[in-house]
Length: 195
Image 1 (cartoon, rainbow, N blue to C red):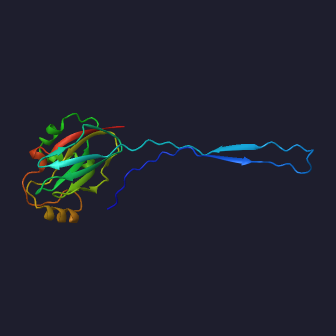
Image 2: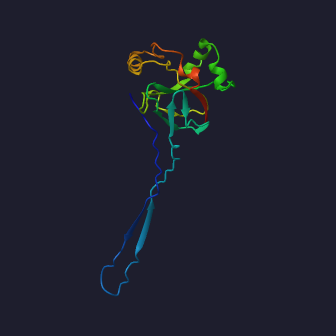
Image 3: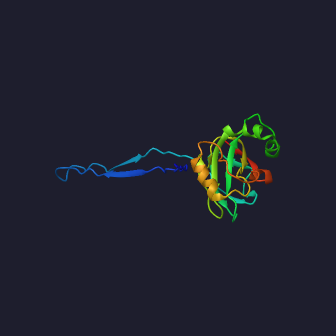
C-alpha cells in the first residue's frame, strides 16, 4: 500500500559573495585596479507549510478530537483506544448542494446512505489498542467541501476476521458477522475542509 504525505519545504535565498581582487601588473607607478565584489542571489521559492496533522482517537462508539473545520491538505491519524472493537475513519465527500446534517443522512434507508459512498476519499482502519493505517486514500483531505465521517464496522465483529475479509475484498466493506454498524451507535461526525 502506497502512503504519501505532503511535505513542503520553504527554501531561503542563498547569497554567494565572490571577491575578485584584481592585481595590477608591472611596476609601482601603475595604480592597482580596485577590488570588485559580485553578489549572486539564488532564486527564491516559497511554499506554505502543510497543515498540522490531526490526531483522532476512536473509542466505543465515538471519535475524540475530530475538529469541525480543517484546512485543505490536512492529514489525519487514528488511534483506537478500544480493547475489543476494530474502528475506522471513513471520510465521504458530500455533494456541494447537500445540506442535511450527518445525523439526518445516516437516518436514511441503507440504499440512500450507500448512494453517498462513491464520494469516499479515505479510509483509515485501526485494530483494537493500536494506531490506524490508510486502506483507501492517504488519510489526507485535499479537496475543500463538507465530509461525512463515520465508522461502518459491524458492532462486535471479530477484528482478525474483518481484516482478513477486507484484504480479500474487491471494493466495498467486507461482509462479516456482527451487529449494526458503529455509526448507528453514534460513531459519526462531519468536517468542513476549507480551501
